[in-house]
Image (tube, rainbow, N blue to C red; front, side, top):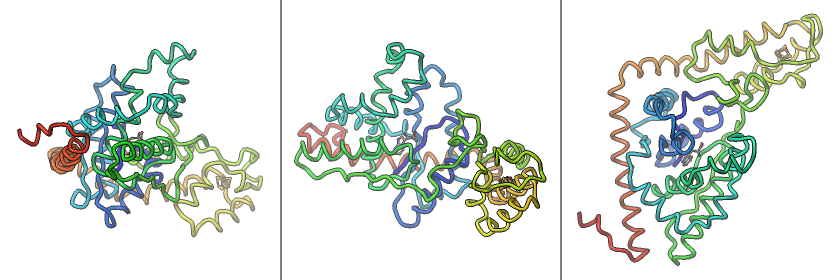
Length: 334
Ligand code: TRP
Ligand code: SF4
């Protein structure tokens, strides 16, 4: 089980950090992939105009890279009210100091406002519950493996701890302890050399055109000590293109290194070539995305179908949970 917030089009960091695993896992596991729109509300509650559009865009990004609706269940969090129900039940078992020490939340607080007191005022009850809601996402589907980006490590530890605590306190071995899974390329650098992120505006999107991509790649920071084209370059000092070559064209790296260090090629040409590799790699995905985008009804159909499947699983989990807790199981009778 895994999920992403609908906050905009996905970039190549999402692809290499997470989606590669999502695609690979489909043939080996039963997969549930959720568009977590309630999670988007934890920070976007005053700015919700674009969330619907983003749900659609993220589904297009998933489908075009090869998430196969015949193998995986693609669904939207808010279509499964049982996840909110599980969130409530789990919240009773979640110590408040666990949620307060969430490092992701602490980082967010730093960017929300200049001083800490003011920032904490902006942290809603809902935002505080972010990791509990994420745990509900995972455990509602009884998720065992969670393919995510490296930045989700703390949230997964939280989910594991909470699952274990529930099992321990109820004395029932009910929830699996979910384990994170990372790709071989967990972090991809943006064009400025920092971690690729939409908020740093240093990203290349899956859905970008060839021309957008070329423009972006040309902004990549190279070897800062190389001033003139005639100067030999140093691949070990090359901040972005060189690490990207390792991903896109491993068999070319020897040649790139030779040409760089002998000044046979300038950085501009070297980056233009890299952009070609990137564009060739994503060409089939981009073409598929354009096709799918013409058929929004089909995309909605896929999601609606996934919603039904995911809801069935979540209902079963909740029903078992009421039994464990010794509450009436009213909805079974409705
Ligand atoms: N917090 C995750 C992120 O920002 C998104 C997420 C929500 C998620 N629920 C999840 C990821 C469940 C994995 C499983 O990327
Ligand atoms: Fe990097 Fe290529 Fe320039 Fe060498 S020639 S520094 S590998 S961009």
